[in-house]
Structures are given as C-alpha cells and as structure tokens.
Image 1 (cartoon, one colour):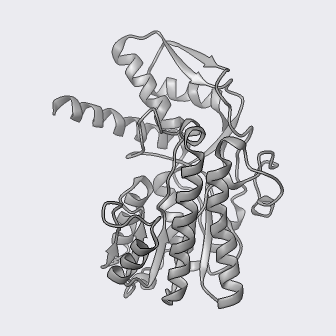
Image 2: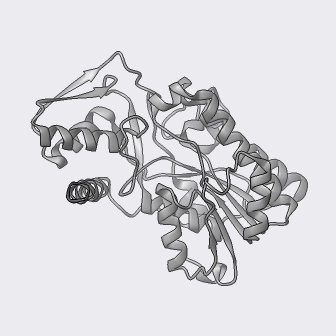
Image 3: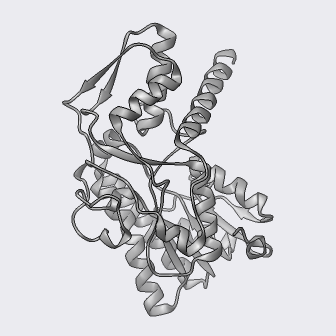
Length: 320
C-alpha cells in the first residue's frame, strides 16, 4: 500500500519531527524518497506564537503538513500543568491549520490522542463514540485541546474543501521514548524503574494505582507507518484510530516488563496514586479499511526492542 509516487515531488513540513514519534516518521519519509523535509525546532519556531507559525511556513513552503508537535506527558505532568497542556496544544494546532488553509496547503495530517475519548467509552473504542461524554479528568484539558483539531478539520473541509485528516493513535512506546520519571508514560517509566532497581539491588519497585486499568499500546515504528499510509491514501472527514488491537491491564503489563527485564524483586502498588482512565482499547477496523494499516510488531517483541535500546543507552552514558 506504500505510495512513493505521492511523495516524489512534494515538500513536507513535519512539526515535532525531532521528537520520539517524529524521528521515525522522518526516517520513513526518507525511505519513501522525500527530498525536502522541514523540521521546525522550538528554539527557532515556537508554534504557540502566530508570528512563528507564519515565519515557519514562509521558510518551509510545504505541500504537505504532518502536525506531530505537542506538549505531552504522563498522568503526573497532566495534573501539574493542565492549563499549559490545554493552551499550548490548542494554539499550536488551531493556528497552524488556519495558516495551512490560507496558503493552499495540499494535505494536512493532524495527530490527536486517545485521551480525547470519554472516560467510560465502551471497549473497543469506536471513532463514533468520541463525543459521548467527558474525557478522564487527569488528562481532559490535553485531550480536548487536541480534539479541536478534528472539529477544525471537519469545519474547514465543509466550508473550504480543505483536505485535513485526523488520526487518533493509542499510547505509543519504543526506542527513543522519554525515560524521564517526572514526565514519562507508563512503559518507559516501568522499564527504567526495574532496570535501576536491578542495578542497585533494590528489592521492591513502586507502581502507581492498583493495576486494574487496561491500556493498548502501539509500537512507534508501526505508528509512523500508519501516519504515512493515511497521508498517502486517506482523504476523508472521519477520525481514524491507529492502534494494535491488543488490550492489557497495567498489572499484567508491569509483570511482563518485570519478566523481560529480569527483575526479581517485589511490586508495590501505590493505590493513593490515580489509575487514570479505567479501560483503553481501540477498534482498528477503520484504519485497515481506509488505508490498509495493521500493526506489524507484536507487543512482546516491541518491549524487548525498547528494553534493549534503553540498556544500550545507559551503557553508552556510563562510558561517557
């Protein structure tokens, strides 16, 4: 289903291209033969500022925009910075899409978040359930700010015929993820905790919540492929989930990572910490139907690759 012809003469502006997901999207664009990829750095272009958005588009003059840039974090970061997460993500997306329409950009791919779904969405989450309730409170400001990209895309398509699409990736993981315990998501946080406990001989590791919530995870390279397939083949108004179709409880996840890292200590569940949304798992039939996307990397294989990458990073840092 890969369409290299789509990219043959097109210039791409990839916001967030130097980030975790963006680095893999960049690699896949290059593999598809894209010659001109413009990746704005926050030091030069703060996309929250309208002047920076205009200057970035003046300098990049793209045919395609893939908007990955976001102010993101785990439950802890969302609880500490709800206003920033709302404002920054709303302003970035709204201004960029408006300017893209004004300049006649050919294709705009907006990346949403699974946090946009209502707290008690029936599992598997179907895209038609997006408006059936309020998101889980700890990350609602972030989720709603990102969901406005869907509203804007549909409105601009209806009024102006602007070709903007909206994708909803589930939680991502993989090499190059953020392993900072203050702001990381659950998989890198657990990998780091187990490996550090192993190295220092600590006999127990704390995990937030009670282990009952479920989550679905998508390997980052699969997510990058899904985004590019959608950009190549999908030109519709409906939101589309990107997921693996596999749901796992946080308890089972912690035990699996414990086994794969070889940590033999005890898990201690801190039930004073929030669980987050009770269940998350996506219906992925729309992505397969509309642009032929299906996750290729199994969960256990993806976790092994991520653990191996993080161990190699630690070894490299220890030598430096």
